[in-house]
Amino acid sequence: MQSRARQIAFYASLDTEDEIQRPRHYPRPVRFLLEEKLRRALDLLGRVTATDALCVCGGSGMDAEWLAHRGIRPTILDLSPEALTRARIRARRHDFEVTLVRGDAARLPFADQSFGMALVHDGLHHLDDPNRAVDEMARVARHELVLMEPARAVVTRLAVALRLAADVEPAGNAVRRLAAAEVRARVQARGWRHVWSARDLVYYQPWTFPFYRRAEPDPAFSVFVLAYRVLNLAVGRWGNSLKVAARR
Image 1 (cartoon, rainbow, N blue to C red):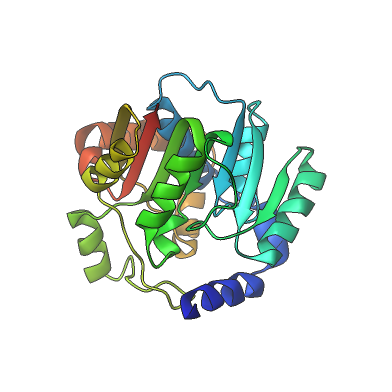
Image 2: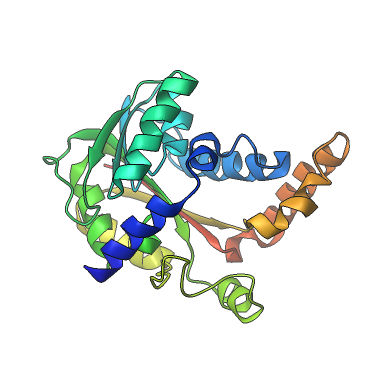
């Protein structure tokens, strides 16, 4: 309960306008990295059939907006009332429809197979027990399941050692990174026949934004995109960003 209270208090303290607008004010390369992360996760499915999606730990609606503008009707579930208020403003400001539900990812208030897709983006690692949320997402999704979370990886441990990443997040909770094999096995045990996973190198923090801004103008941006994709082809399989996708 203490960790839940810390999370709620932390998200209440965030800058409202920043949360509503992100990632519009992020450097162009960071916006590309976010788009690439989402695109690559959905690409694991090959073809998306869901017409609606539950965004678990959906926060201020960044992922919901991305899905809505691609023809998928989103519902956001989040523990923070402030985050849901920001998501409502985002939807009104940026012209998309969304349903908002306050609730706990570890105890989703929905019937089995209520949504075509269940999706989470960097939300489960906040939780005391991410596995319970994985189970719940597998329960409420009808066709497709998509998870994007920090990976339990050697490169992550190196980043922590170099103080480029942390084991305790700003809200005071432990960061619980996930392992691909464990998530795949858990999803398969709940009846999902087809499960895929991938890892990529993805890193952006506010302190890195001045460096990324140097690659905003063309042709620097085109070089950045090419270099990133080549790097991920070479070493992305050992990267810090885990993606798991499943189809029944």
